[in-house]
Length: 266
Picture 1 (cartoon, helix red, strand yellow):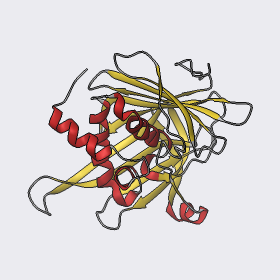
Picture 2: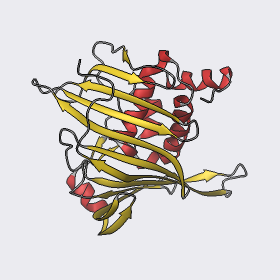
Picture 3: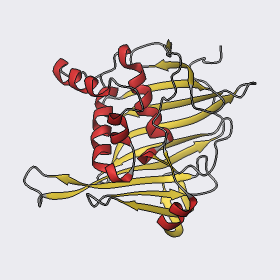
């Protein structure tokens, strides 16, 4: 597994050693108007994933669950996951597949309505996989328990502080009128998982010229098959020296047979 210098790691962990709902993570992983921040947060998060230390286990959980649950920072999920359903997404940056992917799975609903969820992420650059399974309360507003498996380690329990209300940055709730106004078309879209008839929703960034887009369908868990963001990127010259940076999450697989990989139900 690749390791970074102590100085770089200290800076990155210092940036992210904050609650999951902080302005740092929010600006890195939220709305379309902050796509440059999202790109920076993605780079920092990927770096942290490759330099795991148990002290920052909740940082990993925040990064992974935010991408799995609320890409772009908006709550656009239109189809609830059913017990056992899972989706896998690949990362595409600037038109090139990275080889990395992230998977979200609804594992189990307990008798009292609590929910077990799993997020698993494979990083192609380091050839590492991280798995985190979290137990939420019935409203999915508080985290009650987490288990994780990190590179070169056995599955283990992760400490959860009492009153931990957020593992992922909860998405911004949109009105139906806003979604209607942002719908640019309805038509066929092809992704790794197949071809779907999708509702194409697009929001613009009033400050930097970027966009955030979702392709929504009604027959996959979560109701989304593609998320894309674009933003201006500095070339290190001046304000005119800008080109486009793009990032895509694309559905490549789905199923209904998910169960714990970490013996979380014991």
